[in-house]
Amino acid sequence: MPKKEENQGITIKKSQDFSEWYNEVVIKAELAEHSVIKGFMVVRPRGYAIWEHIQEYFDNRIKKLGVKNSYFPLLIPEKFFKKEAEHAKGFAPELAWVMDQEQREKYALRPTSETIMYDSYANWIRSWRDLPLRLNQWCNVLRWEVKQTKLFLRTREFLWQEGHCVYETEEECEKETLIYLKEYKELCEELLAVPVLEGKKTEKERFAGGKTTYTLEALMPDGKALQMGTSHNLGQNFAKAFNIKFFGKDEKEYLPWQNSWGFSTRLIGALVMMHSDDKGLVLPPRVAPTQIVIVPIYFDDKNKIIKKATEVKNMLKNYEVELDDRDGYTPGWKYNEWELKGVPLRIEIGPKDVEKKQVVLVRRDNNKKEFIKVTQLDKKVKETLEDIQNSLFNKAKKFLNSSIVEAKNWNEFVKQIKNKKLVKVFFCGNVKCEDEIKEKTDGATSRLISFEQPKKLGKCVHCSKEGKFLVIFGKAY
Ligand SMILES: [Zn+2]
Image 1: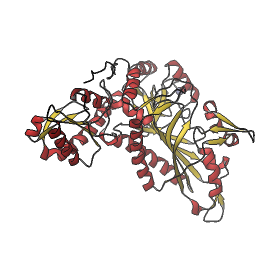
Image 2: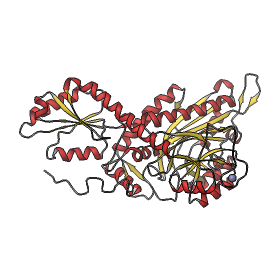
Image 3: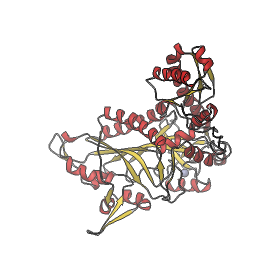
């Protein structure tokens, strides 16, 4: 039997050094690792399988809403970027370029695809009959960030989906912009068990070239907010820049209305941070690549135990089950490994269990151990997986709720930001005022303008001018 290696498990506690702990969990659970190319990551099969679960869930949902998948080029001609000035300015610092040797033209590696897609849209859209046009693409994007790399959360290249729709009317566009936000919320909460706050971005944080940006924000256990997905109402800005026009029912020519919306592999980072612990990865059952692992415990009666374990596996056809019958590892070693890799439920079967027609169920989230009659197994597994999913969500929700506080004045605000809270305050909406808040608090930014606004507004927490809305500030990834 191989000895349990010193470095098999997680060596850093979540409460001790959150950032290092996160890095260790991602690497040791074999989700992803740093590439030899600085700022890039390699997504390993266990990490990619989580992404596939997310894709499958979301793809089904948007197809029901009439969205179709498509694919556009990786390269974006420089001249396209110049068409929408604010968009060009917003993305300029993050672009990486390639040169076409023959034509002497410059192309950016896509940081997002508005421009290349809308150039095609201008050719495709002729009349009101062509609308709404709803397309999505699953792809990689490149943003040449200079900040330090963090697996899944900040890498120069990442995977994402980007939806891009075109409508006849402003109302339809706004309505659907919010529908995609709602889809994101359900994805985060139902699949990933990560509760989110929803709202609108301030002027400063809004998407470059868009009209309104809606956002979902989650709070990580270290007190930093993480943007989980955004949906932008682009108004007619890009339609103007790319000359997208259509003939209405009255034969007159109009500019259409557009939205774009996206989430990325960041969601995997959020998932890991939110639920995992000092033993490694903890995954909600709905998104776990392996939901159940069966570990047989045998001495000189291997065949008999494996036979029983195989029977149990066959009873659980509706789940992703792995039977770990590897020789040369002790059951204890296997438990540690599957705990590290975040399998939600473990089934142990030993000689005594076979005799008593039972198995042992062990939950990854809270370690609870239960003896179950084999006849009860199917029902019990279903209940337990659901309970794990719900209790992970409820725990995270409780943390989120307890982390939102109000601040009546600037001193209180600074103190609460230091306490790693999400702080609700009245704010004037001014970009310069927001810049100053960020500077004075060592990085606090507005996370969102809440959808629910009080009738009576107070003064801006920083500049004391008339408050425009209630805003949640916090430090963020
Ligand atoms: Zn202000």
